[in-house]
Image (cartoon, rainbow, N blue to C red; front, side, top):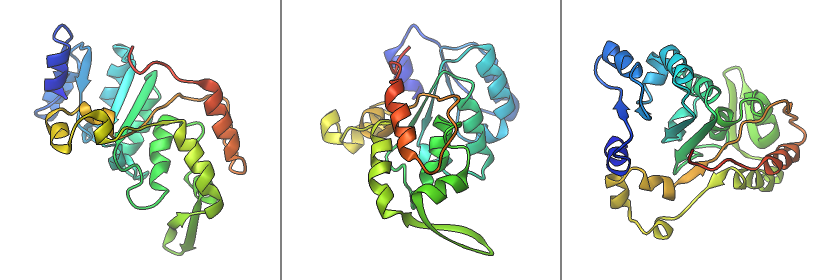
Length: 219
């Protein structure tokens, strides 16, 4: 990402947070057009990141390989939710939004739309086939009647292109990280406010999303 941004935006400043814990804090304090962090910093530096995002008024956050944020129990995933709420736009990039079961989508959707997707158990009750025992809830699939509603929901927040459509092969993407943005599925957000989640009416969510439209991806 750093090399690509510097090559394509030579007049813009790019800061890559790396080094010791204090080195990373020092990097966060540098005003920049583009700030590149690793996922681990969502766990170790989330308080500093939130302060800096507000101070420098960052407008957009991109979570690359967002399927790594699917676990709702991790500090990094909760940090991503918090960061997504202090910027105007958030984008999730992943070729595998569902890693194993459909509830892998929950935390990624929560990062994008925290007001709509505020309860994991409501999400499971609405969309998933699940079993419960003394060890917890285990999702084993999606409800047959919810396949079409989920596809409809994803269709309005997902951008996708094949490798062929992007004119690249997989080796190209290893050399040009941003090319992956053109290839993988992208969960494209608009934050929603004052719309309570109704687990019995997923169509309400879809209608609201379609009504809102989206900002241009670059500002």
